[in-house]
Length: 140
Image (cartoon, rainbow, N blue to C red; front, side, top):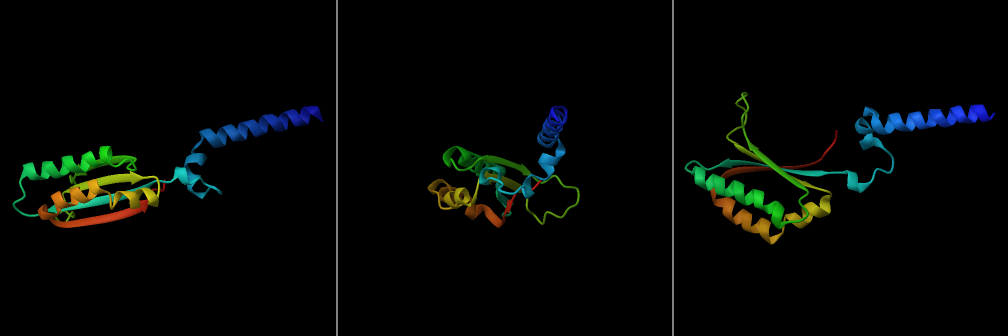
């Protein structure tokens, strides 16, 4: 009986190790019962199409101001941005894409009315032809 219990313990340890180290933990993490709120990420995606005549210096000012929000608004967990380099020619004039990541809706809901975000809006609004915003929960 002791020999059987030892094998069960070894098998259990092996299964736990495989679960924690293998792809199963990564691929199925979204479906785990009781998944903690801290493991979620809310992504805030913003696309800008600038007005004709907006100068490169004005666009750089907008980019720098958007980047600076992460240092001014502590609920922003991560920030990244880039410009369109697609060969498909389907961007419809949108040239700049920004990602701000939040832990939850509360973080995003703190960010939106934050004075630094409002000031950023005042800077960018006169330079924009169109803006597109999409929020989504990250799934892997």
